[in-house]
Amino acid sequence: MDKELDARIHTRAYQIWQNDPSPEGKADEHWEEARRQIEAEGAAGGDTVQQEPTDQSAERERGSRIAPEEQLQESPGDVSEPPKRAG
Image 1 (spheres, rainbow, N blue to C red):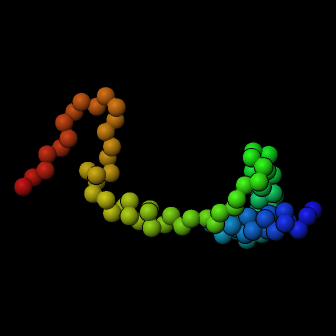
Image 2 (tube, rainbow, N blue to C red):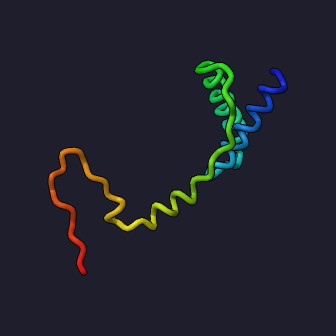
Image 3 (cartoon, rainbow, N blue to C red):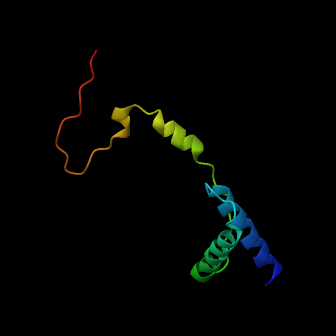
């Protein structure tokens, strides 16, 4: 296996390990999953630029603080009136 591919798989396996809620004893599984992902990326588009994973925890936290009426989205064809605010 060439060194660049091995390094890419190692990095991806580490990212998978970091996101696994119970990663202990799963090194081989993480490695194989990383290898499959890297191979699929290669088959899909040749050379792809690997980006660092984005921390989306701030977005999740922000989403939980949005007022409930702002979280709802209208469905297509929904003709009901929006709830009226008191005050």
